[in-house]
Length: 140
Ligand SMILES: [Zn+2]
Image 1 (cartoon, rainbow, N blue to C red):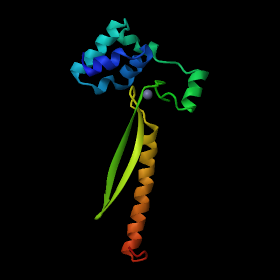
Image 2: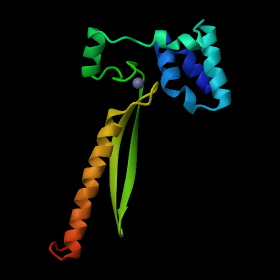
Image 3: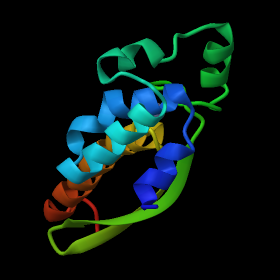
Image 4: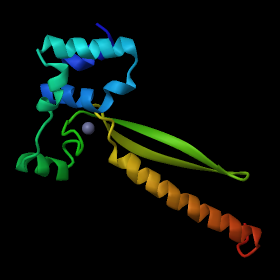
């Protein structure tokens, strides 16, 4: 059994539906076939996948607020990773590390969204510092 087959077989029906809905088109032919096979195995018609997508309710709203489930596809399957990235501005490098929690089903990541926002701010701040340094307003 391939990794993808194994992963799909462990999903709930609504997760498989979300996985298909959000990500099917990003897969190559061979993987698409695996996804379609899994739908078939569960007697889910490809054209009716949307019927299996979860509908929001009070419990779901609460779990989203408590960050127990993904706000986009309502799955609770996440993976966490640590990423460090270096931002090089002129000749100076700034290391910037961040913890990511990403949804395995739809790849949603609030941390990533926050990070991109923060990164923009960081970038602007660094640019401002370097600008001031160049102007010799700040001594390095
Ligand atoms: Zn998700």
